Amino acid sequence: MRIRKSLTALALTAAIAAPAALATAAPASAIDSYAAIRVQASSTSPGYYDVIVYGYVNNAPPYSYVTMSLKGDDPWSDDDLGVRGYTQSEYGHFSIKVTVPKPTLNEDWEGCDEVYASVSSSTGWKKNTPNHTGCY
Ligand SMILES: [Ca+2]
Ligand SMILES: [Ca+2]
Image 1: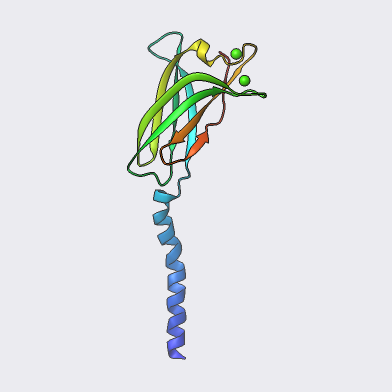
Image 2: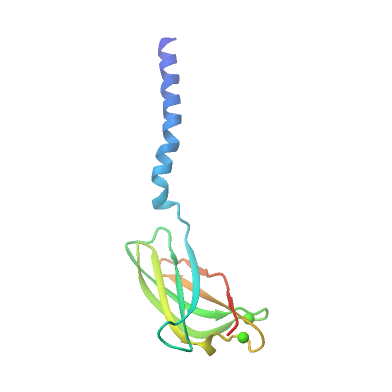
């Protein structure tokens, strides 16, 4: 009876300790892979826009490679905007910046434009960023 009691006490201690250990370990592995896009007017070249495609590839080795190509989202079939970017990512983190003239982002002649990037990693991971909507 005595032994059983102390075992129960140990089990309780373990149950209480476990969540704390999980919380400490979480930041390294709990970030999901993602890809995002940001578009802003270039501060140095009038008429040009900086397109920044960034994100994270989970479980990537210390060095890997990420490529992206810009697309225009359309109901029928998406346009390839002819813009490519490439970077070496460290521990899965990547950021690719390209500077393009305004007309490149004008993927719909009428109305506003939905631009996204198709991202691929040398690890085999692929993802499209959400659309960036703007009127170019
Ligand atoms: Ca469109
Ligand atoms: Ca347009």
